[in-house]
Length: 116
Image (tube, rainbow, N blue to C red; front, side):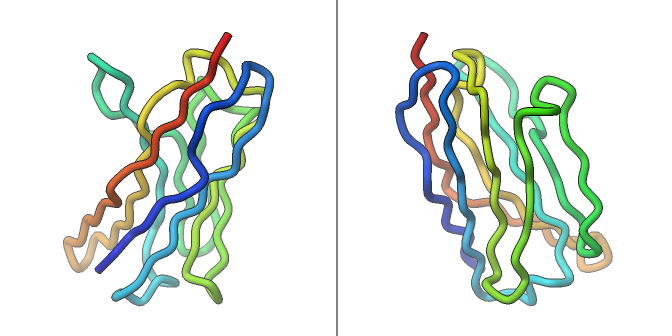
């Protein structure tokens, strides 16, 4: 199983980025997908998740600014990030979960840096 994130980078406050996570080696459509982030000195936290039926869950800190979506045909999950703030600076990780199989896969992470 591979989860490969892309789309991170350096952006000014108020700007936008779109993260992508391409999955391979698994039946993508049956997995719940999520984006997590970890800032220096902080614990990893859930940013947003999307179930296999398309239901989404978004952290209060990014609600109204970030949107998660998935394209099962491309085995890819996206995170559209708008109105970025310096406090959004973190390494963003893609996650794939399938509870009945006890599967929990992670990508290598992509750095997002928001300058003030």
